[in-house]
Amino acid sequence: MEIQMWKEILTPYELAVEELQLKFNHMIKEYRQAGIYSPIEQVLGRVKSISSIIQKAQKRNIDIDKIEENLFDIAGIRLICQFTDDIYNVVNLIKNRSDMEVISEKDYVKNIKESGYRSYHIIVKYKVETVKGTKIIPVEIQIRTLGMNFWAIIEHSLQYKYDGNIPEHVKSRLSAASDAIITLDNEMSSIHDEIIDAQNFVTIKANIVTEILTTIQSLYKVANKQEIISIQDEFYEIYQNGDLAKLQRFARQLDIMAEDYRAQTIQ
Ligand code: 0O2
Image (tube, rainbow, N blue to C red; front, side, top):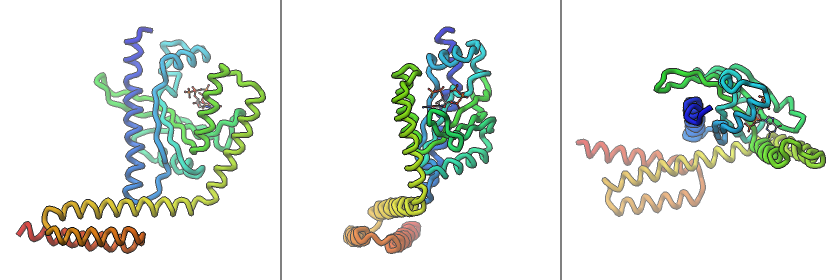
């Protein structure tokens, strides 16, 4: 197939990956802005390279003209989570979306592959609008923890290094590493609530500080310099003290002050 033809085939897949990365990243942003723990930690995406597509098609005896009907992972999204439980929450989030339809799923978290590979795979149908019209694209979404991702990346590069024939002694080390990651994921899950509380505290504090600094900046235009300096001093003192409730109270007082100035400006 000519390179131009490949480009035409792959363009809607690129669009699907770009749109989905944006949507999942926006989901993370919405959670964080609301000060709520996000079950998705990181979003990655890729369109399979032409050489990998050809290689996979040859391995499976798929005619190159039939790849679109037979290969479902040309567009790939990877959602990285902190905890194993998050994986299942993300699966439900995907199932409840109206912009994609789940066509198949494989739970390699519960049914670990012989290699030691763990991940949850979902194939969805996703609609994109191109200049040539609407196109339905299959997208493979892999959902895994940071630990599972670490293992899969290392194993994948070893597959390349040994051309798919990893020696037995390396395989058994990989299997031991996979077991160690299961233990790590389980340990992390057992302190799940404490970690989430700590992370929520940091996110909420960061949101309030941003809000306070934005209000102080807006007050520069209307309040007198001396007043601004004393507000800033008060803010630094409360911030250093680290009391979240005091910071929240201070943010509310500042809001009222800014609102008063706004009302005066309108009069
Ligand atoms: P790439 O380069 O990541 O795209 P198959 O594709 O034949 O392996 P199937 O049924 O299509 O099998 O899909 P399956 O088993 O759900 O796996 C699809 C993808 O999951 C793979 O795509 C890998 O990304 C990942 N995967 C599956 N098993 C393993 C494994 O043992 N180790 C690692 N590191 N990744 C795995 P590709 O096309 O193989 O590769």
